[in-house]
Amino acid sequence: MQIATPYLMFLGDVPDRLAAKTAYGIADWRPEWCIGQIRMEGCAADLGIPDLTLNEAVEKGCRTMVVGVVNAGGRLPEQWVAEIVEALEAGLDVASGLHVRLGSIPEIADAAQKHGRQLHDVRHSDERFDTGKGTKRSGLRLLTVGTDCSVGKKYAALALEKGMRERGFDADFRATGQTGVFISGRGVAIDAVVADFISGAVEWISPDSDPAHWDLIEGQGSLFHPSFAGVSLGLLHGAQPDAFVICHEPTRTTMRGVKHPLPSIAEVIAQTIASGRLTNPGIRPVGIAVNTQALEEAAARKLLDDLAREHDLPATDPVRFGVEGIVDRIAAEFPKA
Image (cartoon, rainbow, N blue to C red):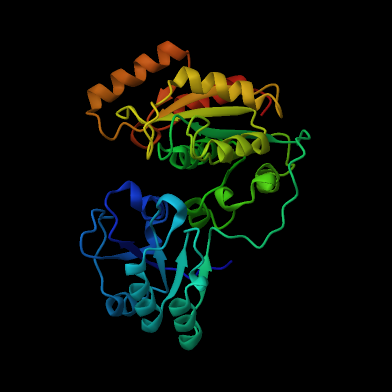
């Protein structure tokens, strides 16, 4: 799948920042590709890049409009269809990470064919996956896991890739969600894979490699989330991680979209080890990544210090304070790497 850049980011009429996390992720990690954004009335997200009309976007060189939103069930709201059709008519390709295929909507399919434009459904792969085998693979793997959805698992993995490479590690980010695929150019949206093949798809993402090579695998959902734990467990078994980093957002009391209470970091560590031992008996935690965006710096640093002491693990906000402590722990735990 070759998606033409640069991008016009479509935010629709989403109600908050988290609902546009795909767009934010691309803008944060590939800002040079994001020329502008287009928003509908009532949109509560803002990437901080220019608002453009479709004609302005084409004039500035945009080649693809990216539907940069997420929602429960991956639906494409009816009110967005006309906007997508207009983008195709203006000369833009359209790419989406939603579960609903763009081409399954007659108006969109007809407009793409009429105007010779491409439709890219990043969440859907043409690859055929085997079932997971759980056989030990060469190389080293780190998985980011979470106390909840949308707590920074992708950002932590990307920050670790950057930090580890700067320290001389041979390390690669492995995408398991639509935003990660947009950023890295390779991967599989695991939550769109038939359940029997989830662990096999992760084995495909992270195959045998050099013994010193690290695959940094993007986590999804949470083992404790009643909606998405099945995806998280299949991903854990397929990733076969040697190490994991726990990701957390400290201001939440219930899990996103449901009324279940947020698990503790200690519970996540214990459950991840208990479940992960099925495919890697040596699995171990190497750090805690906390999204402290809602906290003042002094409060954020105190929280991280407290968590580090409580769990005997380096704790940091990867975006705000970097990942040096976690990289130090990885180097100490895996000296041959």
